[in-house]
Image (spheres, helix red, strand yellow):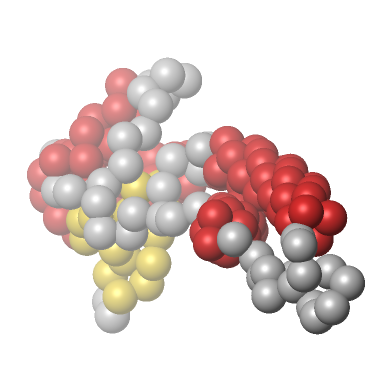
Length: 154
């Protein structure tokens, strides 16, 4: 998803630059025609000389907004959902690993390791070894909390 946001950001920056060049060319041609057709050119300076039409101001404002949005999308970081549980792919997990992952997911993605021992019916050593394998596969993360660990889904 992050790569798609970067692509959209680049496209918006390109569109804003294109619109700015287009607006500049139209505005300069309009001002040139006004200067050439002004009946007051010989005596005093034309009152319209140097004034941009309101459409040009609107277009330049739109270009700046598109440019800023494009830069924001290009440089923004991907959001992480820390409060929500993520689903772990169950492929390449054996029966015991799947059981622990399901217990963790049922607990909204976080559970104490001691609770896993109680709910799974496995002994402490077996749960620790299974969690070591899951951590090695990148499926979970353990964080120390007091005398026990909190197991989180990655």
